[in-house]
Length: 414
Image 1: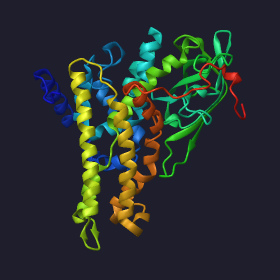
Image 2: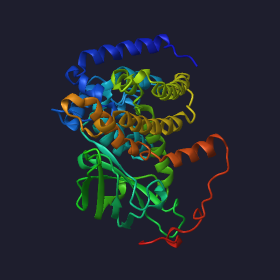
Image 3: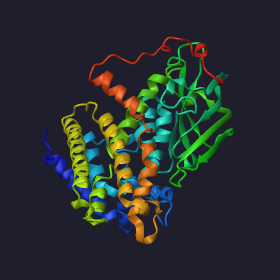
Image 4: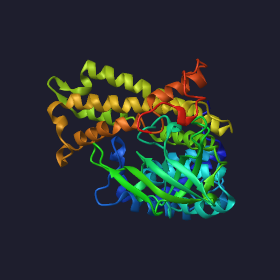
């Protein structure tokens, strides 16, 4: 591995750094620096409005979706230049949270499978922040088993009529468009009867119901489809090839989540350095120091595993399974650290973030939101299977329904 920038990369980094210093909303730096433990919450600003403003400014400066082709709103940057930009953008990258699904997952899928008209119509508006996209995959009866979905799309003339339900759809309540996978043929095995579409979220028959989360926020949604009409021109890929198309989306999803997931390690060290226990500072307690040392080792491993991927990108190679490993380890660490912080706080752990107890409130947010990080983008079990089968070469899971027509698979309430 080579951690040093090449001369060209160093020049790119300096240009990016100067632009961020000249254009970033400095007034939000303190709040953004504290938001890594839980979900982003700004006291006096709406994250969607602020995100759109920052995305537009980046687009005008040629820094939005910079790895995309220029004709679609990007910069034709190299993969390593994208990594450098994310490093220099720093905490301000959190402002574009509403666009991460569109930029990291939906956009690449449209780019790979959409018509030229669709790409030129939608991708520049996504890059500029004018339009926000969401991903309509998970369902109540098919979470990690995406291919088990029940939402139906039936062909009628030049259109498709969609009926069904999606759940856990991040950002659906403020999205303009969505990437939708639906079942178009129930008479074939479940992976072969799916088709991918994109649709206008304001279409008649689309109903979005926000889900109140344990941490008090409403980022996820249920989405219902009642006779929703989608033109065939908004189909992505061939009919019945939706599973293959979805793999592009899912691969980008895990890469996007794994590369930005916080672990809470720096915050935990700072917290223990200031927390007074009965016998003195928490960081002086041998048991606490043992926990911190364990997390420090894991954090270091994650950092250098990420560097290995960055080094591969710099050479023009494709990275290996580093992003699946990163997401798996980071998600577990996040929950473990939050749980331990609450244990150290004792009765103070019930506080919800009053002015004098900001740290406690942050760790509570971290604890309440951390379980979702072990589900979004693939559960721990799914990621372990990927690592076991595709990296270690272990035998695959037994899948008794793999070659059974979908409508012959025993299930309740179909």
